[in-house]
Image 1: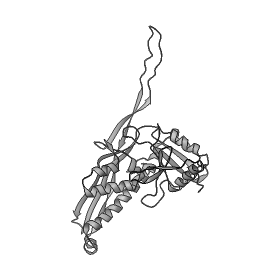
Image 2: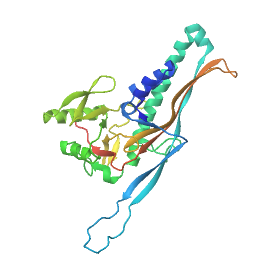
Image 3: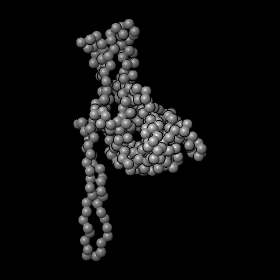
Image 4: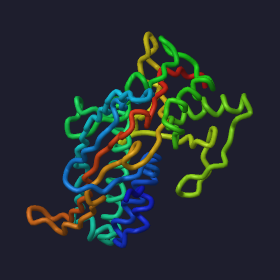
Length: 303
């Protein structure tokens, strides 16, 4: 069974852990929507169709030409994400209740983890950070990449439609930066196609196009734009990308985890007078279908 972090928060009976899971989701439009499969062990193997078997017609007393399909096997490993939070006894005693002080630090730590994970979802590269995971930018191949222009180009509705059509069936969401959302909003309004009739998991209305949510990805834990206009396309060094994603465990794009998010109170340490809380998450990302996601890159800013 695969659950989003929002649904997992509803099932958690641990008050501290429930708060952490919900905070994860509220800080990331990716973690709000992405289903997570609970797996055993530290990796998940799956098969993907490569070549379908041949079929044909035959005459009476003739034989079919035998053929079989080709299946490729892939494996996705889990990574370890999290961190420790120490609160000095002096702060607890002089500034208030231990739970309040530690709750503030837990909130800040989980927010940073949520934003960092979201950054890796798009821009992760194990060649740069071997302890992380590859994101969509590295996973999406040329067949699933639409280029706005050799040296960048202005966004058009045709490009947006091409991005949507590149995904199997129809994507569940289109991810953009705030600036790109303004670009799309102006474009849709100029064609009388602007809509805001879809609501997110927390009841807030979101922009949509053709029934597909358009969700904003903001900054990482260091305050840098995750999908900002800082990509190079030909001679233009200030372009950006849009991603379309279809979610689904064992079918399209899904998260992997073993045991869910763990929040542990380690108590006061012996080596120094601090209270320690540890947030830890064994997780990963899988793109099961070659057309589960697509990227439109090289978009120039106009607003």
